[in-house]
Length: 171
Image 1 (cartoon, rainbow, N blue to C red):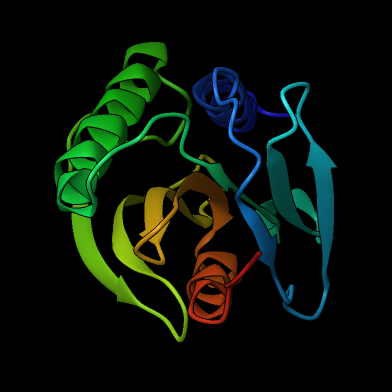
Image 2 (image 1 turned 180 degrees about the vertical axis):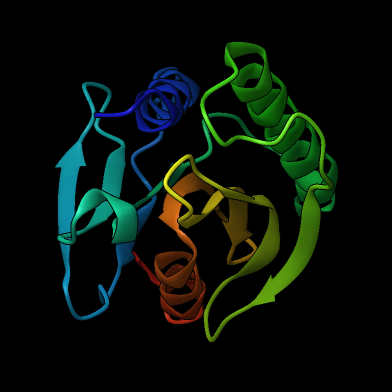
């Protein structure tokens, strides 16, 4: 597991660890060539990951879980900005090969069939010349907010964006 993937898993696990609410189940249709894993954290919160079963250069990891605290949907954009800036800053401080020392974080509004929200991401070229993306997303159905991250190949990132459009809350 590379440093970026480990960092993102650790951040998401910590962010979900204080949630005592049991809402947050999702229906996710993973893209072809990927595997959906679903587990409940110790506090009962559903945690989802989608892993593309490709060689590392073309692989990717998408994660999503219920946000651990109550928050207004109007706070999603600044929260995404804070999290992605901290993630990028942390990655830059570790100086992984190929990660840009500068570069702009891009932001996007998301609108799916059931959920809407925001996403922040940065693209980079790794040491082997592969196009990669690190992103943070927050989505809501108006009742529950979910947060998560993606790290991996740019092509898998595009697939994760398509997948996010069809994620459906359950219950």
